[in-house]
Amino acid sequence: MAFASSSHTRNTVEIGDGQSCVEALLAVPRRGHIQQYYEEVLKDNHDAISISPDSGQGKGKGVIARQDLCNGDNILREPPLVAGQHTTNKCHALACSQCFQFLGSIEMQLAWCQLMAAADGTPLYDLQALTAIQNQVPFLPYSKQWQLPQPVPCSSGCQDEVYCSQKCAAAAWAAHHSVLCCHGSQGRVGKLSAATSSEAGPSSGNHAEEMRAFQEHANSTNDVFLVAAQAVANTLIRAREALCFSGQDSKKACWHALLKGWEPYHMGWKKPWWQSVACPDDVDNEQEFRQELKDLASDSLNLLKAAIYDERFPALFDLDVYGSIVGMFELNNLGIMSPSPIQEYSEAVADLPHADKAAAQAGVASVLSQLDLDTDEPCVEGTAFYAVQSCFNHSCQPNAHALRSGDDPNSFAVIVALQAISTGDEVTLSYIDESLPFEERQEALQDYGFVCRCPLCQQQQ
Image (cartoon, rainbow, N blue to C red; front, top):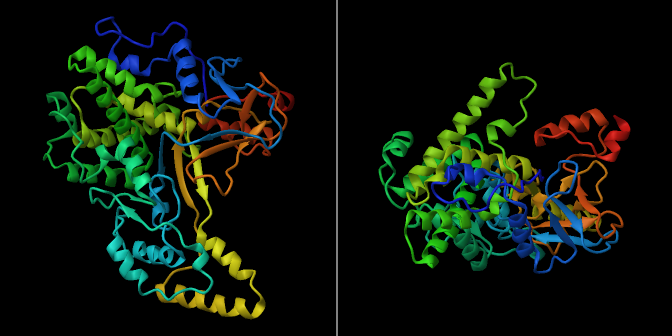
């Protein structure tokens, strides 16, 4: 989702020029900065498209075809900037925290479901307990072909994340987990200021306890806060690297380092979470509803501050900035979904010859009964934010759609042409079910904060 950029807002705001650091972080980037950033992002393997700072009709940024495209052509294949598996889904699908690849085997997936059924609170990846349960699971017939990557724990020993490989573990550590890991040592830098301390409450200085408090609050309220924390942590890591590279530690150097770290999120269309969420029909007092959201975000931020606050970059921990990060995800995120290997296994068993099928299904039923599990076959489900995918504008008559193949990582956004697209045409996606009637489409788009005026809507209005 993209909205209008400004040619008057400067990318770099000097300290003392009359604009606060928070305002600068939330200001719309200038056109030249937008073009420069996306040219760098798209320079490798994305020759088919470019990003226009102004796609017309007040829509702001847009994706433009740089060459003629045919129906079925791949337009974009992009990893996320940040992503997270939904908390409730973690209890049903054992998947890599970085790429969402399913882990283990059919038997391990079933053992994981039993382990989580007995768990209370935040899901923890206790691989020792998981192995003990899996060892009690009878081998299922014909399941060998679904041998998946074995779980790789966090290198610091926390049980909050699990990976499919050392490569994914290292990528997550470099991007955000080194700051957010309960066992990590790169969390808070410097003491909270007096004002911040009073907001966040007394801190015990125990990073693990503070991170656990933040996680439990997010898991019990809205797990979008976990993804927002990834964006904050990623910005911190990038800012610290830029500051180290500069060899300076002045206030001005810290500010420029923060701008560098913030750059990928600066580009996204942002609106505070409590303003961007559509008010439900059953809410009587909209003002109270939005204040409750703001208070919830404030509680989440204060818990995160207690764990990872860095006094060199105070603007990053401002409530308006944090609320805008969450709002950015609400307006621009892409849902991730991938079928479970249990589902694929069940379908394969159903296709066996009759005699073999009966024996296999009896074996599966016996295991499910032993583990006290139902026959649900959950997908892995999550949400992600992408630098380029978030620039596609909506149309109820889109010329492209998201469509991953079996070879694409579960976390990637893959955009494919739905029809022939000519050079210079805007490439659009549908944010909703475009088969809905006009009124229902417009209602569904309220969550995105705009009224669709695509050709179909203008024709049907």
